Amino acid sequence: MIDHSRPDYGETLSQIGELKDMIENVEKNLVSQVSQDIVNPFVIAKDRFVDWLEEAEFTISNYKHYD
Image (cartoon, rainbow, N blue to C red; front, side, top):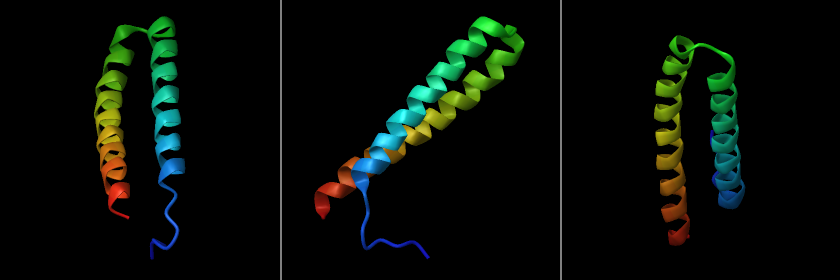
């Protein structure tokens, strides 16, 4: 069961930001170290995941205003 009694929106948003930064750093490293045919599938998956993170970030940012 999810405990909604003490949500920490700020921490979650901070972690989302950190995660997006880490993913971007991994992409930069991959681009400079491996062939394009390996990088392309990563970039596609990364873009989808970052879109999902941004959707979660948007939802949390807007939801916390209704507390």
